[in-house]
Structure formats: C-alpha cells, structure tokens
Image 1 (cartoon, rainbow, N blue to C red):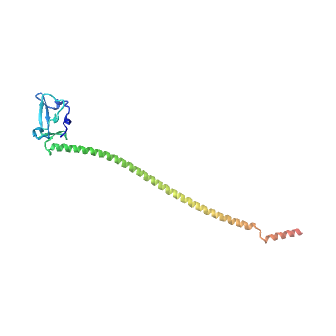
Image 2: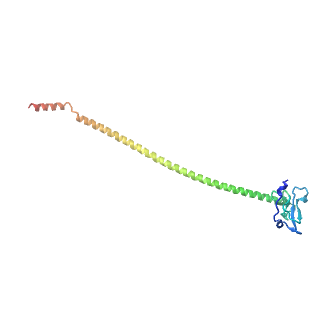
Length: 198
C-alpha cells in the first residue's frame, strides 16, 4: 500500500474540475485495495472546497464506461477494477510504447553518431590507402632511379677501365718508341767517328 502523504495535492481551481451540485464541490474517493467493493468508488459532495486532497481523494471524475472504476496509481487515472481491464491494459501498453519510442529515438541518435564516426573512419582509411599508394609509387620510382644510376655507374666504370687499358697500352707503345735499341746506337757513333776523322 502506498504512503498516505504521496496522494496529497493542492486543489487549485477545484470548482472548475469538480461538478458543483447544490452549491457544493464533488470529489471522488477510491481505495482499490479495500475488500469492501463500495470503497472502490465513492462520490462525495462537500459544501466547501478542500485546500488539499486527502489520501485516495480525486477531483477527476471516472469515465462513465467503467463498470467498477478504481484509481490506479501506476497510470495516475481511473481504470476498470479488473486485472485484465481494458483501460489498465491500454494505459500500460501506451506507457510501454512511449518508453520504446524514447529508446528508439535514443538509438537513432546513437546510430546517427555511429554512422558519422564510421564515415570519418572510412574517409581516414581511404586517405591512408591513397597515401600508401603514392608512397609505393614513389618508392618504385626511386628504386628504378637508383637502379639506373647504378647501371650508369657500372657503365662509367667500364668506360674508365677501358680508358685505363688504352692509356696503359699507349704508355707501353711510347716506351717502346722512346727507348733506343742496341742496333741504332752504334750506328750513330760510327757516323760521328767517320765525320770526325775527316
């Protein structure tokens, strides 16, 4: 059973909500837990307005379609006094639908944020892949360039080796032509002697 102080509420404008019969104010009492069925729904008319409603008192009139109306604290309204009453079931279903709608809206927001995060991640991945492709192309170009430089260096080394061989050969030829042989030297000496003897 609920605390008696939780139902006390000010009755501002009760004359607008309660019907005035015989210049009185009409209130509705409901004790759904009472074993006495007459206490489930009692109409009370007072000649004065209550500043605060006592426990189980209400200013809202129950719907005329309810056969045995009782006040339900869960739905904060009048329902049929039956666990399988349509009004209570409808009210509970409505509350659950509202809760599900709220949760669905929250999930939609989270999904939207997740979609944005996924889009950013996809963009980052594409940028990284493009960067890797550029780096791969640059590495390939650099490798090919270094290969050509190495080939050019090898060719230059071959040319240098050939030039050295040519120079060595030229020096050898010059050495052969510049060194006098034994046959030519005595001939020169003999000519001088002949000339000197005259």
